[in-house]
Structures are given as C-alpha cells and as structure tokens.
Picture (tube, helix red, strand yellow):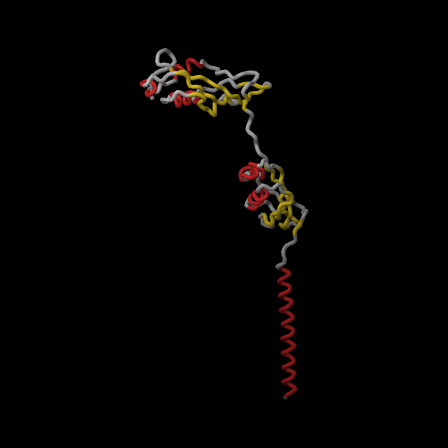
Length: 251
C-alpha cells in the first residue's frame, strides 16, 4: 500500500514537472512571438508618403525665431521608421543645423500623415528611411531708388488728382494749404504699397493724401536691366484753397 502511495506521489511529481516545463516553454514561445518586428533598410517596395511631402513641409514648418535672427539656414537630415501601418516613429537627427531647426523638423515629421508602408514578401514591414528638411530664409525683392527706366502713371495723373482729391473740412475752415509729400513703393506689377508721409500738413490732409495715392490705378512699372522692379517714388499732393485740383468733401 505504501509503495502504491509512493508511486502515485512520484507520478504526480513527474506530471507537475512536465506541466511546469510545458508552461515555461509556452511562455518562452509567447515572448518570442511578441518580439519586435524586423527593421529593414531596403525592401521590394519602399515606403512613400502618398501625398505631396514638399507641400506638407512648406505648409507646416515654422522658422524658429532664433534661427531666423541669426541667419541659420541649411539642410537637416532626419532618420525615422515607417511602421507597418504607415505611421512614423523613432525620429532622430542624422545631420542638424541647430538654432531650433532640428527640433522643428522632428516636430513636423512626427505629426505628418501616414505613409504607404514598405512591402516585403507581400507583407507591410517596418523600414528605416531618411528625409531631408531644408530651412531657407527668403529675402524680399530689392527696392530701387534710381533705375534705368522710371515708372510712369500710364494715365492723366493731374486729372485723377483733380477728380478724386477731397479737401478736408477742418483744413478748409482753418486755412491749411500746401503740399503733402507721399513716399511709396511702385511694385513690379505697377501696384502701389508701403505709403508713408515724408512731409505733412495736418488737419486731415495727410490722411486724405494717403487715401488718394493708395487708390490710384496701376502705373507702368520701372525697369532695370530689362525687367520690372520695385522702386521708391515720391509724389507731392497739393492742397490749395483757391484754384483747380481740389473739390469739397462730399464723403
């Protein structure tokens, strides 16, 4: 009887040992199944954005103030993973330029829409890829003071002023008259911008002169080396109580 009990105990012990080994093997297999997927450098079908990546970058990148103020420009190279679902992860800078540009490039890439994932053996896989991001400070076109061919109105300027200039009531009642000197930029398309008063009269005349100049039709633009350019131009606007060139304020 004792031998039977000992045999039974030995059987249960061996069974428990076998179950433990099986559980251990199953756990090990489960851990193996959950191991990270392989990361490829080159696959049969490389990942791609599926949208205009340049348009996305130009629409979302913001030039850091520090980089702009210190004229920091150049190309950053960002390395990242395109996962099986097309999302981007593990961004890091392979080549940076500093000034906050590196951090801005990673911020934009981390939030970009999903790509078309890489395909290997007919299945989507994780692929390591790199993308250049360029920061360039765009300079404004030069504004000339003297050029080969000066701009011209292309319409009767005197008639335009006579027709559209309105004498401010306050200036009229207080006998304010004289010339308001308006400086402005004539653009490449003949439009007018950046109007400022170089010498004013007050009494509402300065504001009226600016209104008049800003509302003028396009001019014939100035030419430099055969091309239309921006040029500064100064125009006197005369306010005179008697004589042509003015009309009463009927706004």
